[in-house]
Length: 379
Image (cartoon, rainbow, N blue to C red; front, side, top):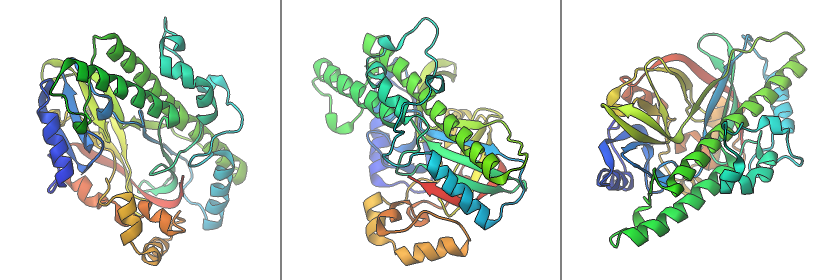
């Protein structure tokens, strides 16, 4: 555990994971941990021979992308113009594109395979053509930031939209059905139905999950390209954009750890291999971080995916003070996205202290750049 205190629900879920007969070595709890479905968000589980859809989550491939620009300053009125241009190009929340996007924006199916081999991807492909390049809702965001390196950055947090959820739900239902057939002691309540990786169902889930991870990457990539076009159009000046940094935080992958080949489930957790560059966002009122992994073997070479929630969405809407949250953001001169009580679920006070989160994982990552938000778009 890389956390001082853990909520009881998340601890109970961690115990359930540790008691799985195919759990490998230990369960990792990261400093942004909070209760999720089946597995804590901010957790890492390695397994032998089995894959758990709920230990990946419904937003398969959700993650972060960031780009450093050659700009060193933006006036506030210009930032507002850029944000307006971004909103015009990128659908937010439940909105999708009205027309299908170019198929070249979609992930390439691996050589020798076809989407016809993937029942859910095949079914959802046409809808996904209208969803690629869209932000989504909840904690997904677009930010313009000022880096401690002196440069302006742009950052996107988004996932696989509906196609990822459909894949997750489909295979979780199959896993439940099979587990109930195999094991009279199976408990639906623990939300940890599994699929053997050498089964047809497990193998197809892995293939569809991999497609959704790459779809989420393509989704963020398209948004980044369109944000870049807004910068170029409205600033009317040469801008150099560094290569995009990308990191996913809801996925499972086959990796070597402690001398064994295992399936590492990261749910609200990112890879932090030795010298791997990653992204750890804060809330819309706090810093985000570009980091470099230390490859700590005890965390299965992982780190947190963000600050982590300290209260649920409905709880935040009931308990937080709207005027106080707005004043706090305006004092920091951040162009924020809190307008009504409904928006309080994404207020900074609904999240853990990102500075404490970073302090608790000093043995997992080094900070390369601190990013302070200038303006935030939420779905």
